[in-house]
Amino acid sequence: MADIRLEGVGHSYDGGRTWALKPMTWTWQSSRAYALLGPSGCGKTTLLNIISGLITPTEGRIWFGDREVTGVPTAGRNIAQVFQFPVLYEEMSVYDNLAFPLRNRKFPKKEVDQRVRQVSELLGLDQVLRRRSRRLDAGRQQIVSLGRGLVRPQVAAVLLDEPLTVVDPALKWTLRSKLKEIHRDTGHTLIYVTHDQTEALTFADEVVVLNEGAIVQAGSPAELFLSPAHEFVGHFIGSPGMNMVPAEIVGAVVRVGTADVGAAPDGLPPGPVRIGVRPEFVRIAGPDASPQETACAAATVTGIDRMGAYDLVHTRVGEHPVIVKTEAGSACEPDAAVFLHFPADRTFLFRDEVRCGSL
Ligand code: ATP
Image (tube, rainbow, N blue to C red; front, top):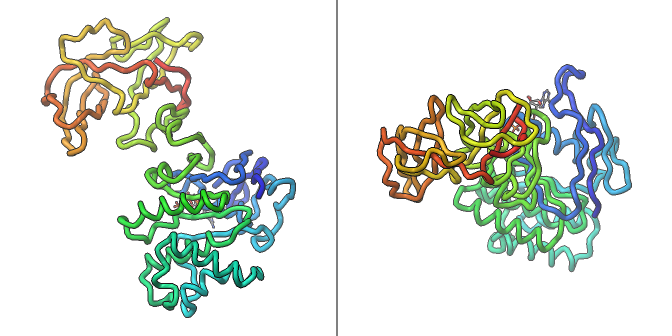
C-alpha cells in the first residue's frame, strides 16, 4: 500500500468554464481513514471518481506511490469501491457475493473462506451467509456491499461514497464502529465520502473538508472543531455551527458596534472582520459582571431552546444573534440583560472567510 498523491488535479465538466474540482495538490497517506466531508455539489464524488479512475481529470497527475496512474482505468488501479446503493449479484448467496472479489483474483480457497467469515462476523452477516442476496432488505444488501468493499486485503484504497445512506439509522452507529474495527485490522487506506458531519467525525482519523471544489481544511475532528481555519468549517461543523459576529479592527481594538470587545492581533490592518466563537465556549454572566473585562459584550436574551441534554440560549449583541450552549436548566429568561464572555483561546477573527487571528 502506498500514498495516493494528487498533483494539480482539477476537473471541469464544461470545457473549463466552471471547475467542479479546482486544481489541487494533496496526499492521502497510506493506511489512514479519511472522511471527505462537504455539502451537496461541492465535488466529493468527482474527486472520488478521479481517484478510482472513473473520471480522467481535466488537469493534473495522480500517483499511487511512485506509479503514475493518471490515464489508468479503474481495473488497473487495485481499488475497492462501495457506492450509495447496493451493487450485488442478486441471485448469488451472501457468501458468494463476499467471496467474489477474492475468487476473481485467485485467492486460495482457504483464505477466501477465512476472510469471508471474518468480515461477515464483524458486519453481523454470519447468520445470512447462505441466503440469496435478493431476499435481504435494502439495508442488509448494502451491508453486504460494504463487506465486498472491505474483504480484499492489499488494495490501494477503499473508496466509500455515502455508503450508509440506505441503512437504518439505528444500525449506522454500530456499522461505523465496525468499520473502524475492520480498518484497524486491515490497515486499508479508506476514503469515506459524506455530507454528514456526525458520520465524518465519528469515523475518521482525518477529516478533509471540501467546499466549492476546494479543500478548505483538513485535520482531526478536534482540530476542526476547536480551531477552524475557515468560516465554512466553523459553520459546517458543530451543531449549531459557530457564531459569526461582524466587527471592525479600529486601531488596537476589535469593535462590535460601539463596544470594544478585545485587543486586535498585532499587525492586522484596520477594516472589517468577523468574530467567530462556538456556542459551546461562550459563557453567560449576569448584568453585574464587569463590562471592562476583555472579550466581553453586553447582550439580550431573545429565547431559550430547552433541548433536554442542554439548553440553547439565543441572545443578541446589538443587532447580531449569538447562540450559547449551556447545561440544561439554565436560569436565563427571555429579555434578560446579560454579558457574554468570549474566551480568548477559543474566539477567532476571520477576514475574507479565512482565519486571521484570535481575539
Ligand atoms: P452530492 O453530495 O450531491 O453527490 P458532490 O459533492 O458529490 O455532491 P459532485 O457530484 O462531484 O458533488 O458534483 C460537483 C459539481 O459538478 C456539481 O456542480 C455538479 O452539478 C457537477 N457535476 C457532477 N457530475 C456532472 C456531470 N456528469 N456533468 C456535468 N456536471 C456534473
